[in-house]
Every structure is written in structure tokens, then in C-alpha cells.
Amino acid sequence: MAEYYDLLGVSRDADADTLKRAYRRLARQYHPDINKESGAEDRFKEIGRAYEVLSDPQTRARYDQFGEAGVSGAGAPDMGDMGGFADLFETFFSGFGGPAAGGGAGAGPRRRGPRQGDDLRLDLSISFNEAVFGQEKEVQIRHLENCATCEGSGAKSGSGPTTCGTCGGQGQVRRATRTPFGSFTQVAPCPTCEGTGQVIADPCGACGGQGVQQVRKKLRITIPAGVDSGTRLRVAGEGNAGQRGGPAGDLYVYLFVQAHDKLRRDGIHIHSDVAVNYLQAILGDKIEVDTVDGAATLEIPAGTQPGTILTLTGKGVPKLGNPVARGNHLFTVKVQVPTKLSSHERELLEQLAGHHSAKDHPHKSGLFGGLFG
Image 1: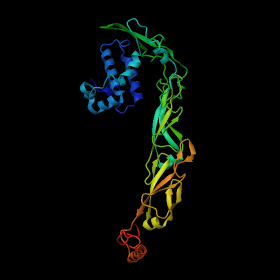
Image 2: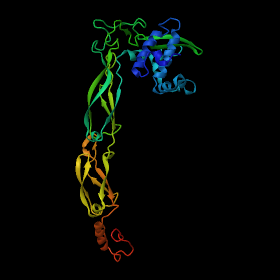
Image 3: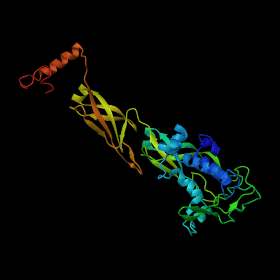
Image 4: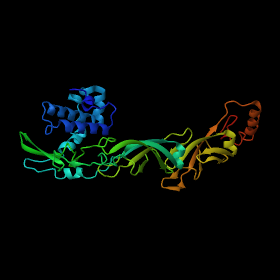
């Protein structure tokens, strides 16, 4: 069998929409009910197999890495999952019925009406402060819009769709199949008109009769204050354009917040470390610290111990949906003890230690036993 991408006539980086369009075009061309040439049915099966594999991200990844060996035999996809095959089955046999079934009554009408466009996803990375306070960001997307030339009709100006000759405008075709279990009638959307009951004899030159074109577009997205990694924003109507007058899908923006080099976030609270020297810890002090609001003053109480957590109220993250309510900024105190002392510093500390004599603290010994007991 030929290489799957070659069978569908697409490049190896083709997206899902490109694969589906290529498959549908070729399936219409080689469908046994339409193409009576020798070998058409075998080609139709090969095309179906190629699309079955490439339309499923997992089997496609195995095929890209190992070729056909990765999707057959022991490495074959589990058909109980029906991932890519489900789309193939929906395209041609969604109305499968029993031996005398007229089945699939709902398949044709569902596909003939307007269809909503696909939703799109955009991953957006933002800074720590942008997540805290919110931001308006400009992004660029690629999506399908109604063709400006034919206004979404798919037909050249002055022309319009005509009744499909394959299905007579019904949007469905029936095919009888004999099996060891009996004769089955398969009712499926017409492969020529894709279930619409109409075909475009004179397609629009700009969009090739599709009615939509892929365009690049710039959007300004408002990021509310208090978002975090994993927050999903919905931008209505900015997905792919719908077909046959259907509404456009939506754009979903998934946010990823970059780490800060000094600050750590825990819900609506912010944590960071603050270093003080041993004299500030003993005597107390007021120091300047960094917060998301800028510089602020933090009071170090006298006798502060290492690991003490001090709080600046209201300096944390705004609550999502209620930016007036904010968390706190919590500082973990790290006491810095000097490794070397000048002779003058040592003399002063020895004088201080002398005030805490062994008489006052008989259970302690050494120079700083009394002082730090």
C-alpha cells in the first residue's frame, strides 16, 4: 500500500480539517456506487484506512514513528476505541439499519441543515503580574471565515446550488450489502453532496466552493484579575465559521502563568522569603520589601525567630470574579548570622553577654549561653 499521506494527497503536517477535506473529496471520487472503474473499490478502502489512521492523534503518532508496522499487528490501534473509524463511519454509514430497516432517518436531515463551526483552542502564556492584576492582550489566530467573495454560499456570483443528481436531493444514499448474517441496508449521507441534497456546479474561485476561507486575525483578549494556570477563557464566535449558514464556533483561550523569580503563589495568597540580620531579629526593625504592588514596609518585631511568618494584609492576589477581595502576602523570615566578626563587634557582644552571667543562668555555659538561653 502507498504511504498514507500520499494516498490522501496531503503533507505530513496537514491538520485535521485538511485531512477530512482530502478524504471526503477522494471518497466521493472512488466510492463504488459512483465510480465503476476497475480498482475503484480497492482504492476506496485504502483511502478509508489511511484516513482512519491519520484522523486519530494516537494512531497517527505511531504511524509517523513506525510506519504501517506501528498501526498493524501487535502495535495496531484498539478498534474497540473506534477513534478515527468513528469519523469514517459517520461520513458514510451513520444510518446503518437491520435486514429490512429503512434506518438512519435522523442522519440525513441532521447533516442537511446549518452546522455550527468547530471550536478552536489557543494556549497563551502570561506573566505573574498579568495574572494577578489582569491585562488586555493582543493575540493572532488563524480560523475559517465565510468567503468574502461568495458570502459563504460557495457558488460563483450569479449562480447557485442545484439538486444533487446522485441522491435526487434527498441527501441520502442506500446501499444493500449481503453478509453471512443476512442482507443489510446501509443508509448514509450522500457522498456527492455530503448530505445537503445540493451541489455547486459553478464553484466560487476564491474558496473552491467551500464557502469558507482560512484567514489570520488579530484579537484583543481581556484577561481578568486573579487568573491562574489552567484558567480557560471563552471568546464567543471566534472559532471556525459554520457551514450552510450555521453559527461560528467559539475560541477557548487556555492560560499558562510564568513563574516569578522571587514570589510564589498559593491560591489568592503570595509567599516570599525575607532576610534580616541577627540584630534586626533581636531588636526589631522596619524594612522595605517587594510586593506585586511595589515596595512596601514590613515591621520585624523584636525577638523574631527564624522561620517566623509575617503578613502584609491585602497584598496578595485578587479573587477571580471579585477583584476587591484580595489575599495576603506572607513573608518567611530568614535570619542571617555572620560567619566573621571584627574585633570591635566581638568586644561589644562579649560585653552584652556579660550582662547575662552564669549566675543568672546556671544551667547554661559558654560565651552566649546566657545571652541566647
